[in-house]
Image (cartoon, rainbow, N blue to C red):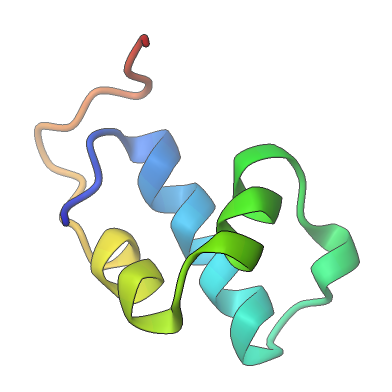
Length: 61
């Protein structure tokens, strides 16, 4: 599942780093904190590896 925005891709990258132990989980905020607990490492890899070219900064609900 590719990320829909740059913000979602970056949040997934931060959550993935925390899940792998590269950063402390206490450093996570907002969506990345929720993603870390609710998604698998594979799902986070898929979101985080999305190309940023052509993606909007944010997507409204």
